[in-house]
Image: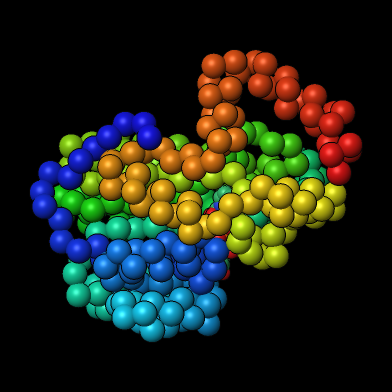
Length: 280
Ligand SMILES: NC(=O)c1ccc[n+]([C@@H]2O[C@H](COP(=O)([O-])OP(=O)(O)OC[C@H]3O[C@@H](n4cnc5c(N)ncnc54)[C@H](O)[C@@H]3O)[C@@H](O)[C@H]2O)c1
């Protein structure tokens, strides 16, 4: 979509590590990478769900393995890299830092410290750990890529989503930094910034009160299939695109924020003051 970096050398078949592969977008990444002929190490904090994804891939004739990994722990992500070396036939050439949780419903000051730490631990530190462990290996290899699953929340500043917005802003900033650092190495970096995608994020997260009701209503009405988002992202990553904003509203918010930032901030403030109660 924006910016392009093509690989310097011919690349072997994809050998991928996907975090949070047991559900939603992560599961869709694992299945689609396998459908395109790649081998996948499916990891998740929930062992049974990671195994179910890997079993489904193998049942369709693909190559997949499953391991447990809590991305909020550096030692667990370091072990994930060792597992990948042991289980995959080829060196890892694609890392999808996808694992994440949804938190919302309370303003800054009332959101608990536990929720801040939980969200940043998984959504931001998980991505930092994935990049810290795998980026040097990919750089040395001279091919492959990293896809970080950020969100439109990376730049939308939606009210009552402080921890989530901060975690996703960090994931986007890290992707942009890494993209600059890896320029010319043959390693691509892509940040996926979707709006609503139909997954289990509502059920698995900590979205409370009226925000939860609104979230579920919007999700039912506007949520898109993870399969479509993933196909678009893998195609864009192959082209070397840094940003993937798969839906119209994701691109509209990005452009409005960039071109009329003060009006955007005023608009979001007005929606918070006068609009949210009516929308609920
Ligand atoms: N669904 C959406 O509308 C949406 C929109 C924008 C961005 N995202 C992002 O997409 C990513 C995937 O979320 P999803 O919507 O598929 O939700 P999901 O709840 O369906 O899947 C998330 C997966 O991550 C796993 N997970 C949770 N904590 C983990 C941890 N500490 N270590 C490893 N795995 C862990 C869960 O077990 C689950 O399998 C997240 O980063 C989320 O923030 C989702």
